Structure formats: C-alpha cells, structure tokens
Length: 77
Image (cartoon, rainbow, N blue to C red; front, side):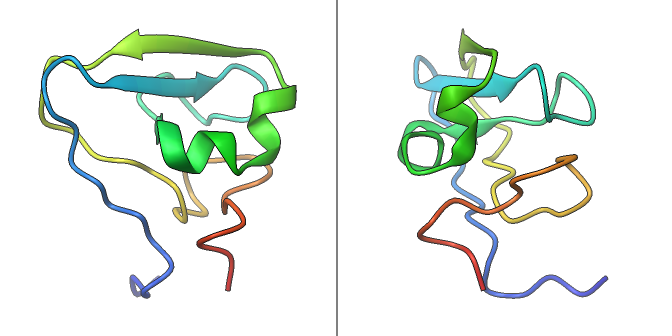
C-alpha cells in the first residue's frame, strides 16, 4: 500500500543499536530503532539487539514487516 506518514524511517548510523522481535518480525531484517522499540509492545517479547553497520532504516509503521504491533505509540495512526 501507499506509504503514509506513520513510518519512522530513521536511517541507522554505524554503531547504533537496532532491535528485532523474534516473535513478531516477518524476517530477521525487520528492525526497530531504540526509540520506537522502547515505545512498542515488542519490548515485552523475545527480541534481539544488533549493532548497526550503518544504512538500513527503522521498520516501525511497516505493516508488512510485523505479524503484530507494527506501530509504536508514537507512530500509530
């Protein structure tokens, strides 16, 4: 579908921490920035942290990236 303003889209800098939810991510490349992760349901799920090598972006708001909880509280419609 068309991309609305509900996407975070933050681009990761090298060394930045990213979070992937093992319960909800469609695949391991679906990640959240720290801000979105802290304000999402996924912090109570099984998640893993990674250190970004730079590039890539936060998938918060992408309904095709998550089985549940695609939006953090700051990006939900």
